[in-house]
Length: 469
Image 1 (cartoon, rainbow, N blue to C red):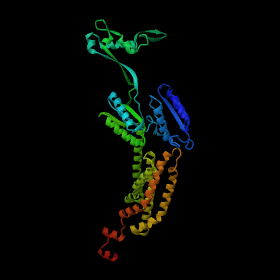
Image 2: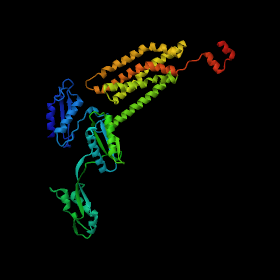
Image 3: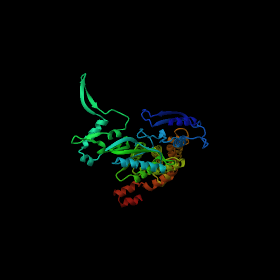
Image 4: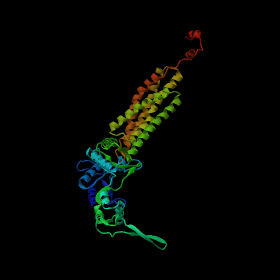
């Protein structure tokens, strides 16, 4: 019944191409849940929104649907999810912001989870906040009063036996038929009364054979408990998940959620990333490891090629400028530091080094061929290598421009990498032409003549020094 109103609303929206509704969940057993899959029309065909007067993109339409569900669907917990933000491997609940709190006491853990969720909603750190804590399962607690039971000669085992026979039945015997043995289960006839009322009417025999009303020796309580207790790494755990708050990136929401959770959780309770957030962190660590390993391997290869430990260092001087240029490009393009921009940084490490290699290698060749000084070699190498450096850099930037300027579907995945490459190549090219020659001239030593080398080794005498002079 609640979904029917949502269907009518979606039919009226010009942005919607098709939608599919699964009421009761895919298994059919979730009578209190429904899922709606929405496919939007391509950009340019969605029409203008009445309130904003412009065509809405995916994220803007998500906010419109979220506001509608929160206002018009009573007594519900609507959650709007972008499938492209589900992370790698499909682990967890598929939300970009997901973490798990763990602790020894389940009641304390559930209370802390409720407080954390309320705080996250109030401070707008996350939207569509929910957890895997399912409460509402009815349960009857039968608490024996040991003092009164002892006064009446009633044992706790006798109380448990009577209640078990009433609710679950007891096996009174068995019979064989056709080579099979069948149990005879003795059970009270079902009626419309609640289990609590049935238990209160029971009687139990004491150690003297007398019948004692069970209500005189026990206290019957009705409570609402969790349907299941989840665990992670052998510890009781509750997972909280949702989307980043308005105006916040995934990392910013995770950082603020961690601060909020740690301020509320007691000392023995822990906060851990899970799901898509955990996968994102693993991906970042893997890319950083690839960046470091790439740096080490590249240094080793260049050192073997140049036959020097100084020249590779001179080549790598351009890398800090490429990273600062990449960050500047992301800032100007309004992009965030995510997995795609990190891949762009890894690419930059290979792209930017070629400018420095062109300069350093050509300067070394001039010194070997003409036996000139470092200054003369640099002054000759820089103008000669300016043209190929500019040609390759401009070609790289031109190749990344279409991806940076794209506005179609999937542009959010291509643009961060493109802006990082453009900014890194542009800044590093401009600064490399000045910085690398300076570092080369500072670190490189002038080669001594053969006579000077021989004198240093003691192979020539003082007279020879005069003659050579």
